[in-house]
Length: 258
Image 1 (cartoon, rainbow, N blue to C red):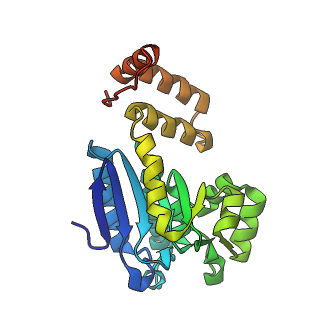
Image 2: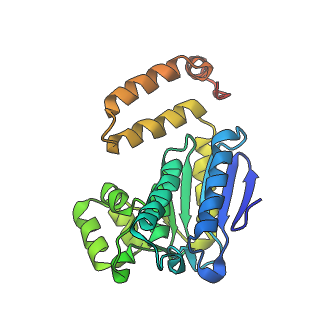
Image 3: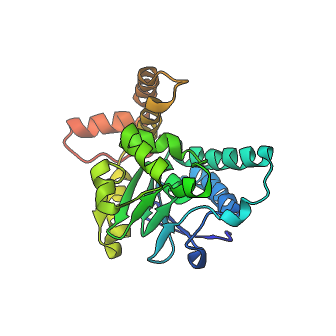
């Protein structure tokens, strides 16, 4: 089904592994095409409740973009490349189901940008994050300048962007870039334990949490207005009736996503 991804669906959790370990899972056109294909499936397949994205092998989540594809691009082609990468990462960020990055090893350049487009991040203790694009005479082009500032604040983001510095997993935790740091062998289990809990919640309510939280950073939207409309939408669902009834009857709710 995919040239560069391995995927498996278990207990409602789709695990996607970027599988180019010989290239440290670097992002190229094929990876982006496969991610776009996977996102169509994620959006449309009701059996998928949540998603993990990780990289093959112990060394790298994604060590960057495939720089060999950058040479000789015209101004218009370079704009199209940046826009195309941004569009894929917007689809991840705005997916109606939780997408978690499990960062094993290097998440650099486009890899750091991919991780930041996910709804949250869990790192193994050998993870390293950075945006080294200035070393190439470039800057992050897939949304990294925006999301890094959103996630760790302007001052810290500016320093990392301009110095091409790398931070380790514990610094990323301290900065708020990742939610948890665990030993590498526990990385996927940690993500699954969190997603198993989220998967018991009302799917429409979860989707509306994502939509409303994302509106904080969208200048075209009034986040409070998005929240009001999302709240009202949830009020009309069968899941809301089930959730409130179960609460009053002191039993566990069974949600159907309707």
